Length: 143
Image 1: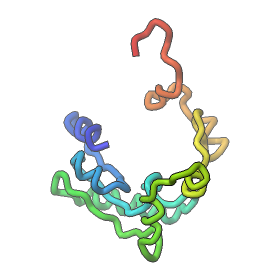
Image 2: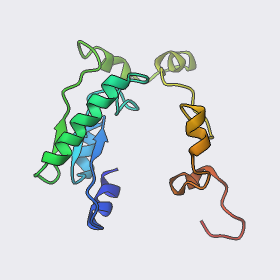
Image 3: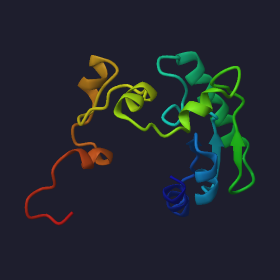
């Protein structure tokens, strides 16, 4: 994400990366980033926790307005749990399929776009330029 953000910034568009992987974000040095100490995949907050998601986004945008130091990563003041015990299970590599199934608390993944509501699906652009990876390349056209 940091590499893409730098290229977008080079073209004159300010960027802000949201990250749950501090060391990775630090290594790719995006122009500006916020860090949320949540499990990977939850960078904008817990699923269905709209109030928390809005607070996280507002905090990130406030930092975006106030940021002056290129490459700085600002930690956001939100916590996944009362203590860091959740990190122990996240960092363990499951040794069996059963352990993997138990450790993976993410929602089911799909090969097709999923929408939160029917109205979202109706207004979605079927020719989304950022979703080109979801369709097969046109025959005879180089990827």
